[in-house]
Image (cartoon, rainbow, N blue to C red):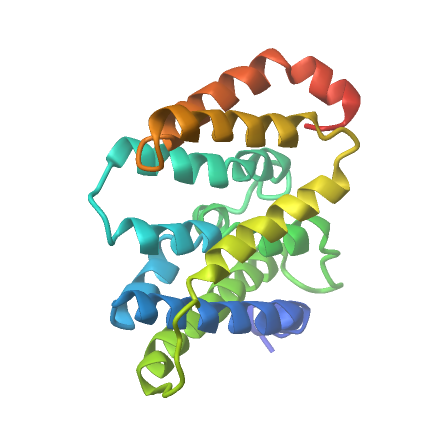
Length: 232
């Protein structure tokens, strides 16, 4: 058995938990996009090209309204800013992998980072191919789930109204998880307060960019205090 096949076998075994999670969430995303009025091609292509779950849910709503490039850029950047730190953490692990590194960087989702950053490469297994297969399999599960959801959505006969609440629920879960992990809630509470004020002054259609700018300035100025308190 060649080194590619050996690496694939080990990577597939390690990726099975991701298959279950990505499959279910991907199907939900595909059905959600159908409910918004998009064909299965949209969730399939966005899963392949964007490959950022929370950003893809957001983009579904953004595609329905007028396009604001700056707002879209800032929102997606804030939602996925953690990936900047993922990349820095993986510099050493991806060193010397040649062309594979480009796909490894593109495919670094939260779950893939959790697997690849702590993975113990099996004996006799090529490191580059193992990490590549692991990353590729994870994205394949997401793309497959999104495609299946987009195809199954039109076949569902029960009422899907209210499914768009999954977006609110997802961000509420992310916020709750962050609240549990942090020792100081200063950053979370300040974010809520700033967004509330921006919503009050600028209205629901224009509050995002001002609130993002103020939050960025606030966190930059308070960085040392937040780091000492364990909130960052």
